Length: 188
Image (cartoon, rainbow, N blue to C red; front, side, top):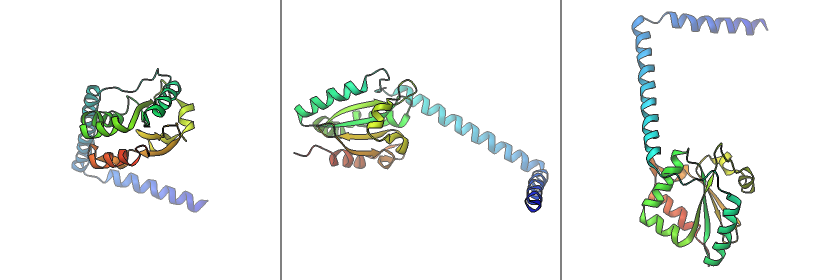
């Protein structure tokens, strides 16, 4: 116990000495770096908020998600389509970016419209849809958001896809998203 106390004392003493031994110029440089970092972080947050404000908000926290999914299953059986559930929320910039990417990329929109019924499953403080997420193994807890849950035409979960592997730079990769969508189209 005495060795531990002595080691702790020496560690704290060293830390205090190292801070005192900095020159005024070094302390000023450290402060300047902190201020610069804070400004860069604030600028990034501001840009993200501006981007988020411009993007469509497809998630409805007031929706009865179970009833919506039940209707989609009935429709999927008739149309021989799978169901693509994009889970996330209007608070999630990556969720909004993905939605915008798919909606404004004709090649992706064509694949989705031909093969899937698409649903935005809300997860937010207003409505966490805990029962529905539990049915699918709570993939958001494991992968974050957005996360994609693919159901066959009978409503059976056939795949869960994390989204970070589909990213490229500050957006999504056309090739990776196209491959993902094509991989889970209905099997005849």
